[in-house]
Image 1 (cartoon, rainbow, N blue to C red):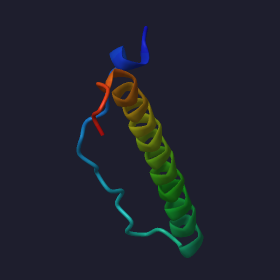
Image 2: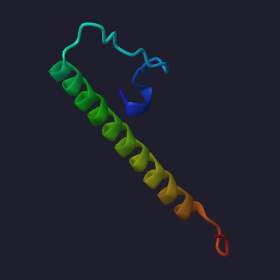
Image 3: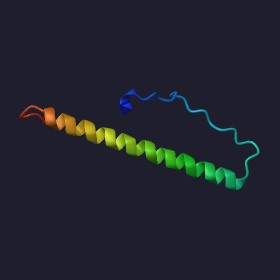
Image 4: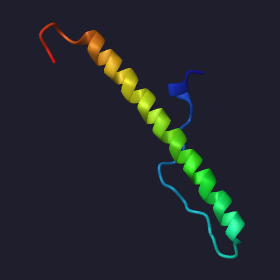
Length: 64
């Protein structure tokens, strides 16, 4: 199965219920969220680089 064919998660974000969490639990939760943000930003950068390369490849002479 190609990556594009993989099922995609729901677009909405459901935040965790933080009631009753301790300080250390919250810090670990924040660290996991930051790691996920970094992973998503890296995916965006890869997609933008791929698109830029494709656009450069198919650009007509004299454009851009």
